[in-house]
Amino acid sequence: MKVPNINSWEARFNDSYKAYFPQIYRYVHRLTGNTEETEQLTQQTFASLYGYFLSKAKAINPKPLLFRIATNACLNYLSKKKKSEEVLNMISVADSSQDDPLQETINNQRKEQIQRGLAQLKPRDRLCILLYLEGLSYSEIGHIIKANKTTIGKILLRAIERLALQIKNGDTQ
Amino acid sequence: MRHPKKRLILAFIDKELRGKQSKKAEEHLSSCSECQALEKIILDERRLVKERIDLLTAEVTSHIPPFVFDKIKAEIRGETFFQRTILASVKVPLVLLVLTGAAFLAMSILLFSKKIEPAISDKRYEKETSQLTLVCQESMTSFPINITLTGFRPIDNPKILVIGRDE
Image 1: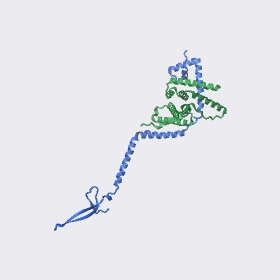
Image 2: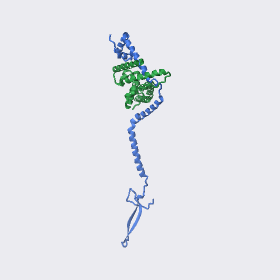
Image 3: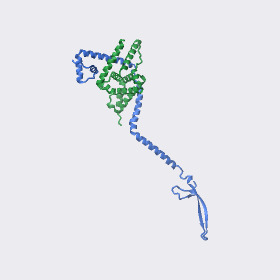
Image 4: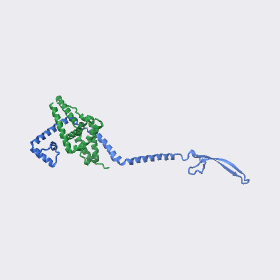
């Protein structure tokens, strides 16, 4: 079996790691809502990417691949735990370290609000909006959630409108 | 004037439209104040949603833990190197080689253990009693004599009894 030249693809892999680690970590954290699991799943995601680089380094576009791997890893994790809906509905609120207590309170309220909003979306719509906000194109998202670009456009518009409405309603209360 | 669908405006904002579709949307948006207002609403909503979702995990992504990953990478490299480059190609021959070696070793031990056994063992010593007959030529009288001989019989020629060999 022919193994690609390590130096060439390892440099590319390291670049991908530095570039996409925060995004993948954030995405996984939003899906799992658990910091410990997030670290593990993020590492697992990059470990898989490493394997891809090793086997077919030339043909790899790391970003969509990473998100696809991360999505599958998260969904596997959630289904194994048999609490996908519970966990998806419990999108994490990160520990806040605001110095201003008033701002901290406001932020916490906002976090809870968006958390509720996301929880009310269908799981597929939730994945879609999270991938979209990480900067993936419609076709990349479509590849991950197995839908065409038109469907992705519809889902995104619906999700954005719904979440924005909830935020606005919450802010006026 | 026919207005584009809302999702097409979002797609235009996201640069997801191509060719004619993109050009058409651009031309329409540049001249239609109603759609420009809609575009602004969509942009505001998108920004608002993004801001709020970013709040959820803004703090937890500030660090990249390279040391943890380096360890994993090393493990993967070890695994991959071993599994993909060695085991995948030589697994079966390796197993066969080990089995053959083990069988050869076992046979060697058996043969060697036989070889180091003394060539002349106690079992091969035998006592044999023979009867000789002495005959007097003059009187033609015969005298039987019993003689006990002690010696050993070589394995390769058991008919011979080697006498007088003192081991």
